[in-house]
Length: 314
Image 1: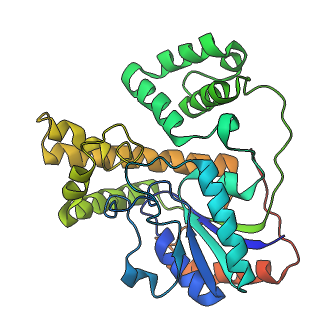
Image 2 (image 1 turned 90 degrees about the vertical axis):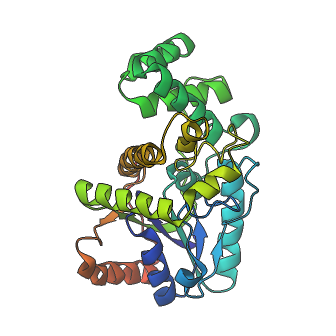
């Protein structure tokens, strides 16, 4: 199997800097695994790598869709696999970098997506997240109970992620998430790095990043999509929070606080996803930057090994 290096983790934990450093060391090229960085014109709020930051390393799947367009996990799956093949053919190492868990999992394993079987569509997930935000977790679970009682019996109402997942599966496939399925097969010899740090440190970094985004002109970006509030791009964190401001119902300070809150919550969900689903090789390079030496040793061992199989968890 082709070797693929993968870097995941929550927002504001240093994925971009590490990916460029490793790309320079291991002759790599970078594929973005982020569901929002695909949109042109949305740069500040999606924390896209700048041209200067790339240090000449090629990046793919960034700025490939207009802000009015939808972008699904199946499209990412197809396009990222094509880039992996292309990068390998040129004798380089593909490095996937991102925080969108569904994208990473769908890429690394042979999940069948697309059309009516696509059970990980971002817009569908956002719909149920919005329902939960408006009506609460209990009401969301009640909806699952009415839709898929077998799944509701096995999923606690407080586990919002699993409740939403079950609703997604039933709506797109007509089958219960509890129905037996074949275990998806791994497609690549991947090495998966998970970046994390102390919770309070992470939250402080997120807050500082949001303040910097506001100072850099995030409002101007949000104004570009205020006329299309129901699109996938406009529903992203860092943009949807401006709607009350545009309606005269919130101040910019309140908007910034909402972005920080939603970003912190999203970071927590990202960490939970990666811990439960993909079991990465965890590193805290924020508080322990010296441990990159050990990380590079491990990557070298993986590259030299015939096959490296990380523990899998679904």
